Image 1: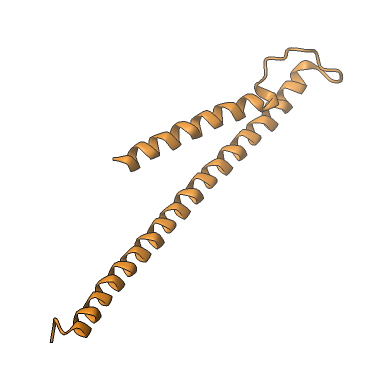
Image 2: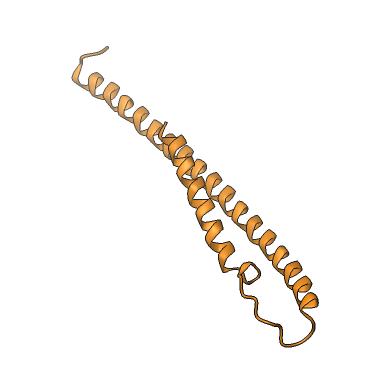
Length: 106
């Protein structure tokens, strides 16, 4: 249950970060000042094309970072689980040796 709520929290954080980053992209601003060189239509088409590719690249990078983070987290969980299992086996192994030394078991 906590894993599901953690995934929801990370999804909300990703959406929040993405919305903030889109506000920082110059093409999405509402600045309607006149361009200094060229016509307004020429500047608008080149600006939107460059901005669109930037947004796509930023989204792809964010998705790659999320997947890499998820993969590394799962790898860390697996390693931690294996270490705990090894500690558990060692604990029971030591108990058997202790019982044998005390003569409680033949």
